[in-house]
Length: 101
Image (cartoon, rainbow, N blue to C red; front, side, top):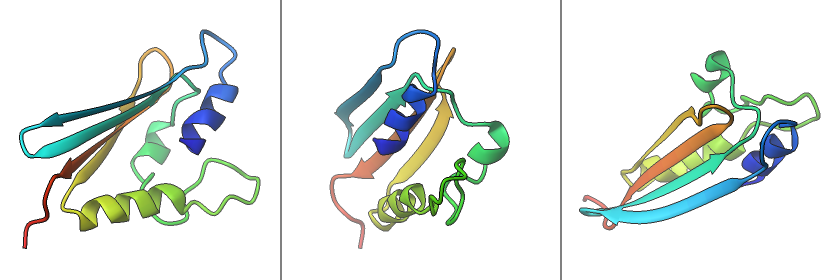
């Protein structure tokens, strides 16, 4: 949510909104976080879940999304990132209700 908030501050056009939707489908929870910020460049988006990847030069360490990705994968889930046209980014998490053993 912090990343989404910061992205909306950089958007001088349109509204500054962050949406968080939580649904269930089948045996999984689907969490969608969408912002109307500046978006994420395709070159960065391809590596966004790697440790140390950041879009800021302000001392950020680039571990937040890496941690989220790690936790979701440990729960046998998935996380994807996509454009939120015309502005912003959408992160969608798919997390099963129960772990597979």
